[in-house]
Amino acid sequence: MTNNQSTQTEQTTHIPYGPHHTHCTSCSTTLIKLKHERTGNHAPIEADPSPNGNCLVDVDRGTYRIADKDEREAHARYVEAGGAAFLRLNHFASCPNAAMYH
View (tube, rainbow, N blue to C red):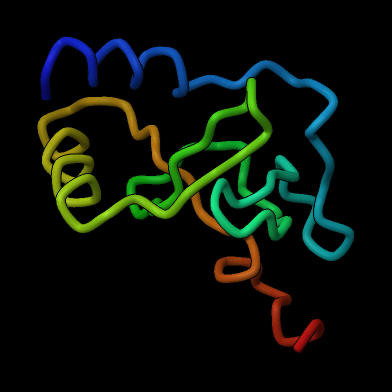
């Protein structure tokens, strides 16, 4: 990772609790309600980073986007090397009770 990416990682690893935060009504996971940066569609993004994450968030803008393949692979290498995860999951894909909503 470049120094710029490392700085971005440090800034996005922990997101202070704020106005975008909420909780899943079925499993209580802490979520951040964000808009996709291109489509504007809202989605519940998990507040805690995940080694399996695929969403990059910009809480200041209230947006997220899907990390591309290179970014996900770099994230996986970074986590495998002992770095803190910084990508997050869309809760629609990870909620243990997701079938209740489809």
